[in-house]
Length: 260
Image (cartoon, rainbow, N blue to C red):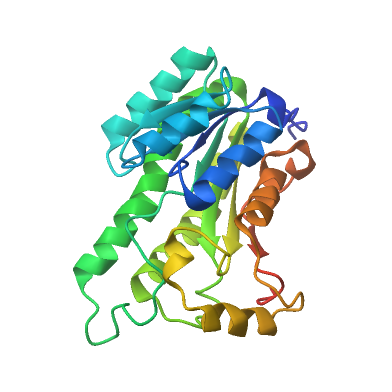
């Protein structure tokens, strides 16, 4: 029987946050920086926002453009992180989201949903996560430590608005979370998911009508909508030493709207 591995504190971790320049991603970046981590602010189209975030934290943040759907670009980002910080990436937060707006009126319905809609979301969500994990594995295995934190949703358990393409991709990501946890546990790598509901407010949720926010808030025990900062705080748990024996789990952070 193997002995427990020593967990690395967050302030000694090198973290990649995909889609980290804006919205929820920027809150995740700030949460890790607030704990002293070195953080790669990944972006695809938000170069200025990523640079501003990195420049505000010299020595601890690095802005890197990479399309997570492209394995070569992801691998180059991880090399850039190691060269810049002098240490391999220990922690990956898979947050990047293919162009999507939480506007129930504009979503594809059952009779208009296309395979292209599904492919677009699977590419960014599932393929992107696989690419980052594979790029991180050599460094994580060398250190005997790794943390993968996937951003999910409560919508596949409680589809208050049936965003078919988005929800299907996130459900697949939960499956990948659990199988990777099983596969990588012997290497000292944990893989978990943090699933939010509607957050007030991100770029993606900015199109959500106010009455939808109100209706969901009234259905939660807390009677309010979770903020991106609160969601990011929960994500820190899976990177912390407190979660060293937790893997393959899905933590719902939605004010109690959905319970396991």
